[in-house]
Amino acid sequence: MGLKENVIVGRLIPAGTGGATQRVHKIAQDRDNKVIEQRKAEAEAAAQLAAPIDDVVGGDDSDMLVDTPESRDF
Image (cartoon, rainbow, N blue to C red; front, side, top):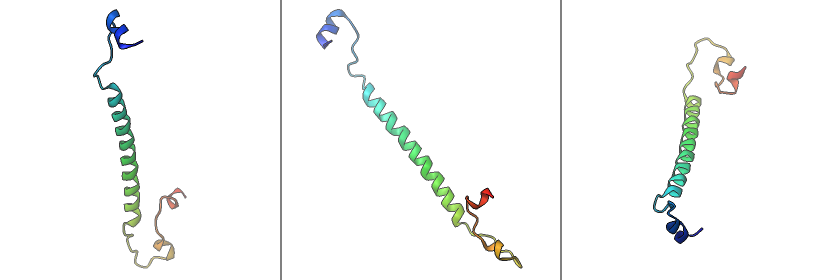
């Protein structure tokens, strides 16, 4: 249906609402938030890996291993 037909019949038309633009903006914002959260998690994991390990006096060689998320599973 065209604009003239809707105006003549008296139907509401979605003119000037910006609905499509708002939907695209919301989708983009949601994607941006997901990326930001992923980057924060990656940065926190990198910071934990870069954190210095407490030196143990008189410890054995196993005390000098780097603690990684993968090694924590065991």
